[in-house]
Length: 215
Image (cartoon, helix red, strand yellow):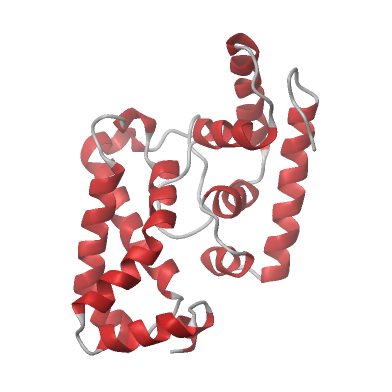
């Protein structure tokens, strides 16, 4: 029970109690509160080869349907906070979509960022680079931006897999420090240090490129 309560507000605790009693409205409200963050996860990790073929909204809808069926079992013995559990259930749906549409092509070491643990699909270096450019650079001309994109992708690929993953979790999925540490199975302090170090390396790489800035 502790894992559930650590990351949920008093208001959520009441919703959880109602959901445990079979209140579908309370269950739907709990799920709705996490839909935005779940969408960020799906959009970051959806393989770009599936653009136009797989709708993130459909992945989330199917994943939450799975979660609704599995919720009684989770609530009986929650070992992780609710959002992290929902993230894994929706992530399983995303992984299934990748397998269905890509098969043996789904793992390409040249374009994917390896996950440190769990079964979620990897975020592509291109997706991470695009997000980083949005966060740390000024608008630039198309040619300069394209060149910068390649440099950022190279910087992302040069990072340790755990550093790449913690950037994805903290900067783009917007997990808290505690949530990111729990998702990776490492100490919170270690997660914080890795995040700061990885972001500094990437910002330094951006600052050294045309049109980049480090502030």
